[in-house]
Length: 281
Ligand code: NAD
Ligand code: MG
Image (cartoon, rainbow, N blue to C red):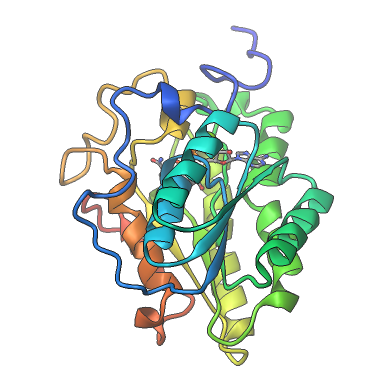
C-alpha cells in the first residue's frame, strides 16, 4: 500500500499569489458604474487581498465604502488591492495575520474600528482547501487546519464585530457550491462550507430583530489563486457546468454589493448561487 503523503497533499504552500496568475483574473468590469450604494460605509473583508475578496473590496470601494482587508501573508497582492482602492478614492487598511488565532481576530476588528470609527459590513471569506483523492488520506492535521481556517474565524470575527454593528449593518459569508452538492475530493472543505450555510441561517434568525442581516454567496468554480494553489489540473477547471466555463471574481462580487446594501433589505439567511448554472438550491 502506498504510504500516505505527509500533510497536506497539495501543489504548493498556500496561499497562492494573484500577481503570478496567468491569465490575470478580472477584478471588476471596466464598465461597472458605482452609484453610491455603500457611501460612507466601512467594510471589513477577510481574504480581501486576492480573488473574490479583492474583487468585493474594489466593488465596495467603487460604491463608496472604506475598506479593511485581512490576509495571511500575501503582502504584494494586498498592497496592489490597496492601490486599486485608492484609485477609487477610498481608504484601505491592511491587516496581515492568522485568522486561526482568536486574539488576532479581535485585534483586527478593533484596529478597523479605531481607524475608521465604525464597521458596517463584515465579509467572512478567507479559506483554504486541500484536494485529496482518497478519503483515508484526509489526515487529522489537514482536517483541523481546514476547520480552524474556514469556520472557526466566522465565530471569532462575528463575536468581535457584533457589539459594534448597528441597525442596517450586514454580514456576508462565503460558502461554496460544494456545500450543496458535495465534493468527493474536497470532503473536509465541503463540510466547512456546509457549516457556513448553517451558521448563516442560525445567525440571521438571531439578529433579525436587531435589523442586522446575515446572508451569503455560494460560488462555483471561480478563477482565483486558491484554484491555482490547490489543484494540479486546471486546464478543465469549470468546464463541467452548464455554462462550460469558470467564472471571474468580477461576476461574483456584485452579489456582495447587493447583499451589503439596502437593495436587499428584506433578505436574510439566504445564499446567492453564482456557479455557471448548476441547480443546487
Ligand atoms: P483566494 O486565495 O484569493 O482567497 C483566500 C484568502 O484567504 C487568501 O488570500 C488568504 O489571504 C486568506 N487566508 C487563508 N488562510 C488564512 C488565515 N489562516 N488567516 C488569514 N487569512 C487567510 O481564493 P478565493 O477563491 O477568492 O477564495 C475566497 C472564498 O471563496 C473562499 O471562502 C473560498 O472557499 C470561496 N470559494 C471559492 C471558489 C473558487 O472556485 N475560487 C469556489 C467556491 C467558494
Ligand atoms: Mg491571497
